[in-house]
Image (cartoon, rainbow, N blue to C red):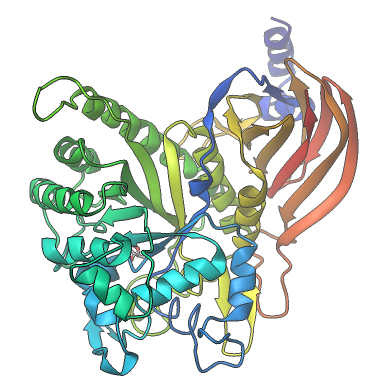
Length: 522
Ligand code: AHR
């Protein structure tokens, strides 16, 4: 009531509501009982594709002095370790829809060179399944393989699973052993193709054709290795005509008894160079998440035991299988050859990446996997030259989230000043997610405001904050600031710790920043 009265007085005096909002403190109210779900570590996944300099010249460069005995760039490995990558998707992307995995195993001198039509690049096949597994081990990360549902056969899909996961014979398991790997790799995560909904995909199909084909592949792959988890290709970037939702519904309906995840892809663009619209666009990621969650609910309600017809509900989750900002290095020459997709990121892109991660945490009950696309050089947080490496701006928010935001996600109340864009109304300047783990609370806040600090009361509804709280800030001189070799003006700054006690404290979030605050709450 007081607020409405004050609003009225200010209006009478001709003072705009945004000024009023700026005079009030924003509020973040945290209640540890309001649990959304467990945060799955697999939301900190990543992706490596045979594309541009991601594999060759990125993670794998046997001729480089910077590489180890396996040909892996040591500087890249070290930077990648900083991202605490939970799982790594490979070999594509669009590339996989023309990839025949047997080209990439066995003695290197016998492996054929091919032409990859997705990115119009020669593929030497010197990096294949065994090298990928070795790289995952060097990184202590879980491998995740996508099979070819474009030009590939059902046999190729199930044989690949046998090569990786079956201990003894008769053929592909033996082949793995012959290639020097006695023990199975136990690859747990397998996706049934990539962006099959897209006209740009080799072997593009309509939803019915994909559903039928992927179902047969799923059966054979599961019969070969029952423990595997399967990810279906959901809609990518709204390209399935104008109705991505019907693609997802049909695919879920065909595959509901076999899959564990449905994959969604999203690349956010800023072609119009509209900062506020760009920063708000993760709202769309959240809306798609909720729409697909509803579609999953429908599919799960229809799951039946094949023999008895009895309901047999098995949860299906969302994998945000490819996500990032990507709009500059797109189309034409920028999408082909050895330097394809070398997007250079700035501060505003890093804030959008933090926004993606906030969405994944706020939807932790249903989003159980997410993979930044991609790891090195290609729309990537790590960028190399033959002799050097640097961390792009988007590296820093991902590293902060992936090293700190675990446990349960909390449904927090946020009262923040808002703004309108052409597409979105009442966009809160403060975009917030909160993780709670073993009496430790982690507050992730993006201040989307371009010029203003937002003074915020952070209130605990039960339990007390105590001790020194660490504060980390990703920011830079200007939203257009980029990093480059030898100069990383956009990075994480460790701010002075703040001493907190009781059930509230106040923090001022600086303009165009992502801030993480972490400390005890019990
Ligand atoms: O990550 C780059 C490309 O984007 C992938 O190959 C494809 O899946 C998506 O269109």
